Image (cartoon, rainbow, N blue to C red; front, side, top):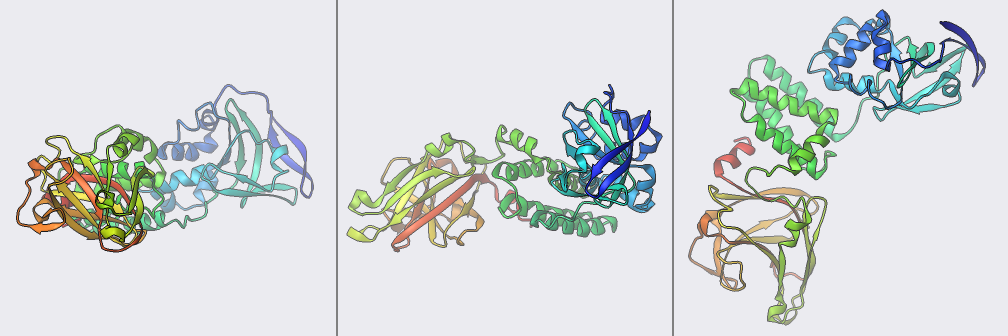
Length: 432
């Protein structure tokens, strides 16, 4: 039964319509479902995939817009939010209405702001005998549920637009991709979506951790099983929506336990890093230094080169098992350097001395790069001297990296992954 309570707010006594705050066996969502006034809210929760979240044991406070409040958004806007394409935005809007914990009216009016599950905040104000949360007025307070409570509000609260590079990229991608898809140009839509997803998995400026970037790579590989460009475009779009919803964490955990196609090293655990060892110019009397460590899902090779005593190089090497490069003609590196020139090498033996096959690549200070090394382009060297000859993929027994640019000073090379791929796969990843 409802009753009227007096609450001391920021501007004096506030008159609120409140429900009996005694315990209710229904969850927040069940309480809303039993009221015709919240049918649109319940449908939105279901469309956004939040049913389980609002039915759990965690205590929540929900600012619940009425059906009339949703109608004020306009039928076209509401219809768009309830589609699969509108799901990420709808999910964020709904989480903008939810606060962790029980926040009854008498506690709410003593706050200036509350933090929401959308990682946004809502202002709390008391004016003209009413309590306002954001721009919405609370019509009925303290509807008690078994896992929290509901405050009924008279309008839908829209969260501030995110300004992250990730959302800007993906929002623009969706805008361009949808236009191409709707015009029937499914191949072009696929190209737009794939380019954005490649930027996510290859770059570190879009807020994804190493495991999440690998999860994007895993999902893209699964999407390639789609038959036809139309289905592939939808598969890519679902990946984009997954990123926007922030749902990559669970997939990243799965990816960490799933060997990536063609992956030789992903450096997801310390064991892969420990397999590498340094080979320095000290063997010839030089003074260069080098060390190997683990970064955030990467290997870090750093130190300092010295030109004293005819030195000037530092390198690291790791043995490969037989068959590591089967079916591959290209080795793909994802690296971040310091602006110096480095050498990637393949060897027919993991022991010191003998032939090595080199490929020089430039780095850009502080930027991640993908470097495709065709095995047939590797140049044969014998103790640093260029010689004739090639190495077949089946003969490669070790990989190595050198800094050997005849310069003295500090160096730092970070390696995120090393993959064995075919030239056709490389072209596909680059969108050719």
